Image 1 (cartoon, rainbow, N blue to C red):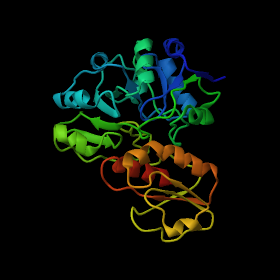
Image 2 (cartoon, rainbow, N blue to C red):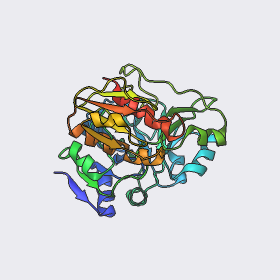
Image 3 (cartoon, rainbow, N blue to C red):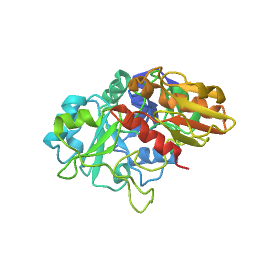
Image 4 (cartoon, rainbow, N blue to C red):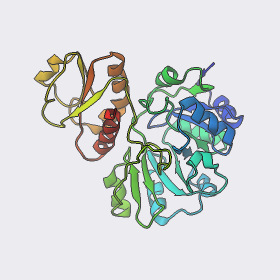
Length: 322
């Protein structure tokens, strides 16, 4: 049975005892296990039905808690950490051997971050162990931004969920690798490319993983098909209207209402303008609402290719892969 908790010490004790507990962050809910206990980490992969070639992010409450986990902490990475931690930023750094290979899919590097959520920070402090945590949903599905979303996908498969209310940012962390001479943004997220490059200069272009198990992705969230709904997703825009509106189509959109919306069976508007923060905070929940209506197709308007719009477009592209 999956317990719903409001007690941080109880949740921390469960993690120390090898249980797996979902908890809120500012981005999405994570499914946490003691990152130093391989058996507990294996339960995360089992509960999510996640392939073992897809690495996990390790969460800690303070910058000094990162140092025992990594072999080097380059100056550029430290500048980003000082600027954006706690926050939606993951740094990929060479790992110490104490991090099990299961956490990193056998790669010599580990993704680490400090979440910007008071309950998450209290949990990590009380647990006193690094916590490996992917998103708390079945593998490849829509990420959870409430405790209810976690239960909808993982009830009975995990020990507990710590209910901290809706997530504020709503899309996962930006992942930046410092494994080579030039930093590389592996996954766009809650910290924009512009914000990162203002501090450390130009970054290398990201690469897409092939989804083949013979080659582990360099970071979580890099598989080409992810955030999948049961309903097919078709993209258009960001301006104009879809080429066709099939019968029974649902619409995921932002901005002022348009006349073609009357031809859709249901509409989820993320923002009345182009407020990308508002869009991001509501994105996954709105996608779940439309999918639950079982439309013939979800027509999704792309976002402006700037700031958080890049992260949102990245999620839309992956959701649209069938």
